[in-house]
Image (cartoon, rainbow, N blue to C red):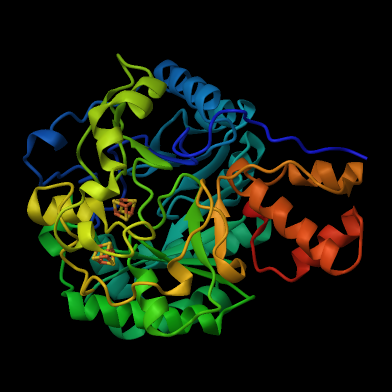
Length: 453
Ligand code: SF4
Ligand code: SF4
């Protein structure tokens, strides 16, 4: 029998990021209208926070990887761009990060995926990729991405990944170009691309996104309702997530889904994870609480990650949900939502102002059971309705060696949650030991793809 001890002894709650999104380059083979980084050969944003387009060199990247691995072991590290596959050293960077124990996901537009590239990325240690698909009609997707053939190459990329066994996520950005066909895109992702995860992103008005943001608050609510329907339709088949939409909790409550599971994080900040569990790194090493937020705590060229995460005014300030302005400050859901800080900044210039695209009137859901949290570290909601990330857990019943070994394939920030769920399932079935067979039975009931299995 093997005990699975929590890997970290640090105090829980904002101790480290669970996800780091790292823009490795401004270079790109597409020129998407909404690019939050203003990547590519023809930048359009003239403000100071987009001015430095230098990139860390290979050795500097290695140093950053080592710092992430030391400060946030097994952190999910998204290597993106621009187009990260345009970096000649991308395989070296993936390999170094993987060797240091980080969970590497490569965020690509998919255009450059070939069998050889997929194979070499997998060999270097990438756990998976994310691909972008914005419309069913190739011309509309290409028009949005500004390169003819982008749709065809991305769809071909998905087929290659399926053949090579490298898991992938499909990402769609909602906007006027696709509002009428979101469900059809989800169907396409599941049926044609065999995706296990479909993420719907909501445009944030930053980078070139500031010139094309085209949804009003009522349309935003309609999209969240449509997403809720799609999520239910694909329950247990494909994970469907709302991204950059922390007030999705409002849609869940409006639909009276008392049995829904919501996501919370240890430390007391659900919804927007910027600066509490998430951070971004720009190509030049500047550190931000969220890649969509062009506000920086400092540069990894001359400051340490731990210093910026623990002590910078930006990171400590953004965690203060009680300091939020307007409706977000008064809101009964600010612990579960907090509004999108990047959207607030993009639309008002004030990082802590209310999220202008939210239609909620504070107080409407006061006392809703789904919102009640217990315990010092944001523990369980009544009826076990919360999926709590980040809280580490020691085992309380016996685990076979093989079952304990399998747990190491799960990112650390979800491992505690999985251990709790597995042990609860065993107890409910009268079992006092976790075996590999039991794990496989539980796994078979979940749609989670291999990269997060
Ligand atoms: S008012 Fe702010 S905290 Fe409340 S639901 Fe809307 S965005 Fe979220
Ligand atoms: S500020 Fe929060 S909700 Fe907005 S894009 Fe960043 S992480 Fe997502």
